[in-house]
Length: 84
Image 1: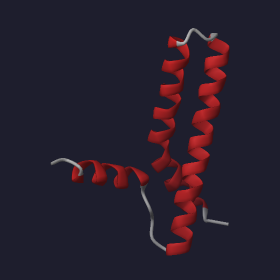
Image 2: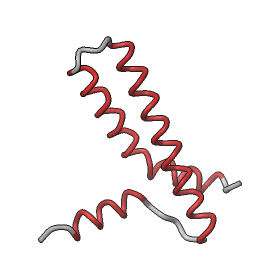
Image 3: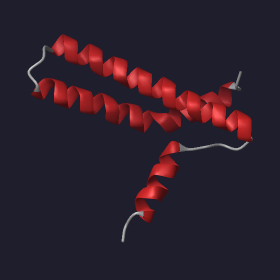
Image 4: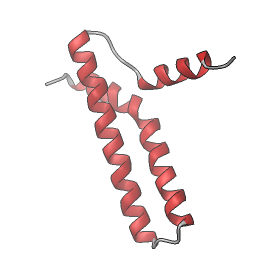
């Protein structure tokens, strides 16, 4: 099992992606005319799944390689490198 500190850092790193996923589900669900209960439940489920999944990947990567892996930093660096 990974230490609680790396789990906290991994969860904080995955938090922006979980928030964006939750927001996207909420926006598309309400635009599609679904009920607010269904949209809220689905958005919460997607956000929790993203947070758990990406946080687990980041924490496991930290545990196996001994150095932290940050999704946010990787996405920002790749985005900056993609500019022509």
